[in-house]
Amino acid sequence: MARQAARVLKEAEEDERNAALEAAAAEVSRSTLDILKANSTDMESARGNN
Image 1 (cartoon, helix red, strand yellow):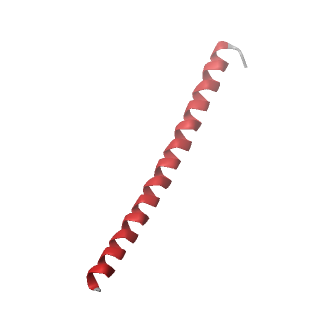
Image 2 (cartoon, one colour):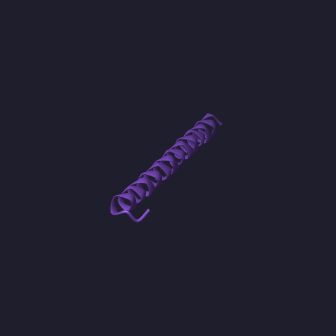
């Protein structure tokens, strides 16, 4: 019974860690997209295409 409880707790901790990693990856993706959009806008402005 104790082993099963320990396994369930470990799985819950892994799930929580994975969810945190997924959230961090999503934030990095959003930040990267924002940077790429800003760079694209800056390049267009520099060319006078805006």
